[in-house]
Image (cartoon, rainbow, N blue to C red; front, top):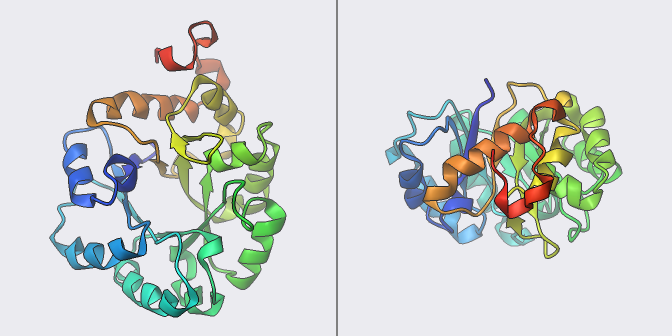
Length: 246
């Protein structure tokens, strides 16, 4: 069964403890501890050994998404504690200033494909350049970013075809026209199903949808069905995206 869970940053902006509390008793066995803003990372590093994470068979860390050249070494040094625990580090390629600083993370470093706003990391061609600098790094496929870049899902197909051997984690959500994460719609589910057969069942899926605690189980159902073949998807188009009944 595929490990599935949610990013703490999606549940509780900047509050990983609050998000973990919201996940207690839910049908999740994976979690991504988010430190998307650079000031959040030291607190996560300080707290990590005191967190009760026994419910999760898969844990990853989302590195800060933006920082300059001056603090990059400090960010790398702070993240080493998670590598020592065997947890993958999800990194946006446009955050990298000096790729040499990241090379000894090996395959614990997971490069995520980007949304259309970003200048790098959106396509196979752009990610080839990143992986040429980080040859041991693995890949985090953000399905929503791939769909935004190419709604036909051709680019997502090409990403999996080229980097499937590197695939370590999925991000699943929808992104709006402003590249903000949103809940998974019926249309997004159908699009994701077009590539679902290319994704091994052991690859963990992390939701990035901004949801309230009482919406967690419903969104997990949407995500699970989005990763199945189209034959199992109910035809809900008549009731509209917001009225999906899974």
